[in-house]
Image (cartoon, rainbow, N blue to C red):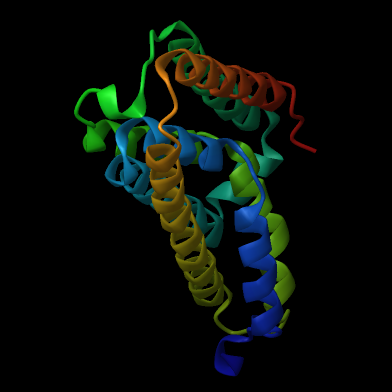
Length: 209
């Protein structure tokens, strides 16, 4: 990786894995989908999140994220759209009747993928994260900064996908083994919905600086 100007790769991998493990809207979405509709739906949501991360990595490498960070208007627009989407998901879960995971309707993996993609790609904090985190592992005199950024972003995303898919499978197995009854499952779903509303409100209050 030295020819790309990438340094401290092992530290980047460990740090990236720890950051991926940290709970947030993406993890909550995967766990919710897996618990209600099985591991395939959870993995579909995880793949959608991975696709959204690819967009952020490409945008950051091309400088689009830098423009987003520099433009208060652009940041605010994306922030409000992302916040509204998270609140929309949360309200939908709060209003859902719910039931046992085993009684759920057949999972719509396309919808799960789209939900994961939009949850990730509409969060401008992810774009700012890549701008702040990845360049620390690229030498200032690197002749291929954009390529180095894409390589590191790809490594980060692979780590994230390994964790997210493992989380989906583990959550589905745990949900099946526990066999949560209808009433507790309904309140658990509402609790997760309230978390999404909270995430959306927090994002709405986020400043670009």
